Length: 332
Ligand SMILES: NC(=O)c1ccc[n+]([C@@H]2O[C@H](COP(=O)([O-])OP(=O)(O)OC[C@H]3O[C@@H](n4cnc5c(N)ncnc54)[C@H](OP(=O)(O)O)[C@@H]3O)[C@@H](O)[C@H]2O)c1
Image (cartoon, rainbow, N blue to C red):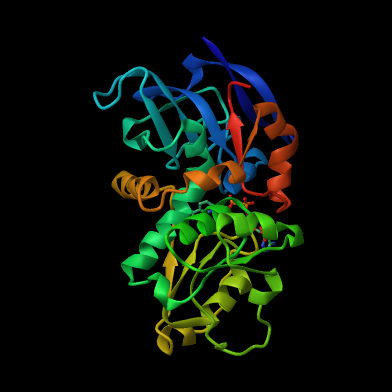
């Protein structure tokens, strides 16, 4: 049986090409569960994989897509039956295992989560890895004692995937959110997601050389890295916490220890792809209950075809122009 997939190839002279081709199910990697993908979504990492980044995908040809939601077509594992609705995010999906930018995937049962009842498959992919990452950041911050009375939380890259979900989850959880964005026109969107205030990127790009700044926020969820992350640490209140989730600005972190040893600030890491499946279930459970953001998802998700993903949206996310989540409907 054949199916449609985005196919990234590397030519003999090292050039990367992207095409949509027909593949055969027999050519998928071995695995316990064959899934008919209904929706996927575009993450920054997928765009890197689709443009030949060897840090993400070592070997081509390849189909990216670290997120997939769909229906079990065939299962050799007792936990999952034909016709069941499920989702997969992270692990090796879309990295070096054929991913969600194809109409079928085959994966180990240990990567699969049963569909939470409160969301549709499309809504699950609007949240996807981005939402799992943002929610995990807040989960870890709250384990350290953070609560809404301690002050505002800064979200950087706030119109992007992780950022939009972070603003939505934080505001649903009762936090005051300061959304940092490079997009002047984004205020109405961010306000709808629950931001109380918007600042530009320079506001968290301190170049004074001071080791500490006036404490202004109780915490931050950062997608940018580099001097933005350094600034977030310097301006964090006593005993606050800053979660590092991304590197769209820079992978570097050149800081002093003063925020840690004088202000007791904690720096938290989030790596949602390799998180144990039990932790992923806990986070999806929170997203289904006290952090339910169903009412924000229509504004965040834009549904596109595999063809549009290929011609427009992969390049757009790499230029930093993306707003919200690009949700791929594999049936269009
Ligand atoms: N740790 C994890 O498990 C995990 C999971 C998912 C993603 N990530 C990482 O998180 C980051 C964001 O991913 P995403 O999928 O949300 O990407 P995205 O949708 O492209 O969002 C990134 C946002 O960052 C801002 N931005 C872009 N370039 C910038 C620059 N040079 N300096 C400052 N801000 C910039 C833009 O928002 P504004 O215009 O609003 O500023 C952009 O929309 C990526 O580095 C990704 O690899 C990590």
